[in-house]
Figure 1 (cartoon, one colour):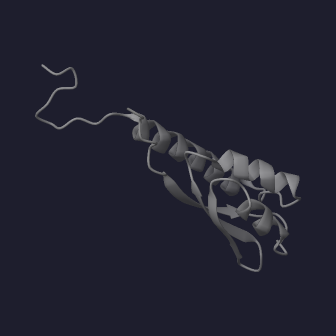
Figure 2 (figure 1 turned 135 degrees about the vertical axis):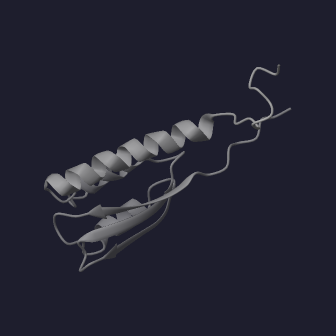
Length: 110
C-alpha cells in the first residue's frame, strides 16, 4: 500500500521590499516550486506570496528575493514581522505533522 502524500499546506505572506519591484522579482518568486502566486502592490514595495509551506518556506523566498536584488525592507518592525512569520511557519509545519486524536480516545489506544 502506497502512503498518500499529505495535502498542501497553503500559506500567504506579505513581504516588505527595500526597493520597488518592477515585476522581475515577482516573476522570479512566482517561478519557484511550491509558489502559487506572487503579486506586488504598494507601488512595488510590497509583495504578497501564496505558497505551499510543505514545498517552500518564507526563508527560501527571502533568499530568492536577495538573489534577484529585491532585498527585504529594513527596519526593526520588518525584522520583527519576518521573525514572527518564521515562528508561525514552524508551528504550522509542526502541527501538520501531528496525528490528532479525538478527546475521548487517548493517543496510546488505552
